[in-house]
Length: 177
Image (cartoon, rainbow, N blue to C red; front, side, top):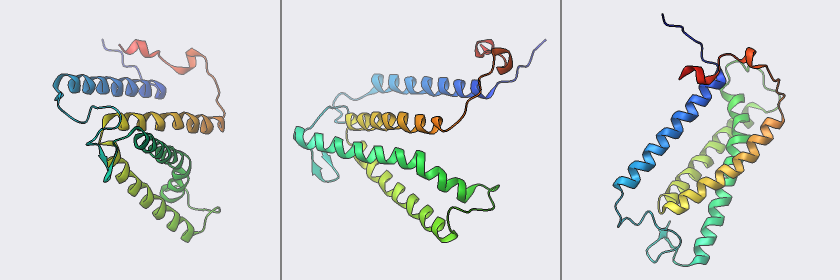
């Protein structure tokens, strides 16, 4: 006899994180196994042939300035995407929100389109910058994650959490394995 257990919302998220992590580890292992040792992508720091958007990054000063610029861009991107964009998105795309009092129609139209245009343009620049060398991409990701820790904590601090006992939250995740 098969007993069907309903997976709780938080367990679904934990399983997704596990799947995501396993996928990432698999990709890293495949890259390590099959990478070309002569590739210029897995180098660190400035190099004579490192060119980022037509700027030769051949000194530690230029490389440091590049990282500061990448950090500012990524930090701004996280703040905009986690704090500003949801406000616009929920006002514009939420089918249940029929009355809006904090923006005019034209204001939302302009802000939504302008915000997504700037986001897309910044995204193109960041792709071009971060694909040039792995260390730049890695540092860019770490900066994004550090800023995200702040913004997620800020958003969570605005919410109220009610703890439930283990009996009320459902079946432990370990029962699914």
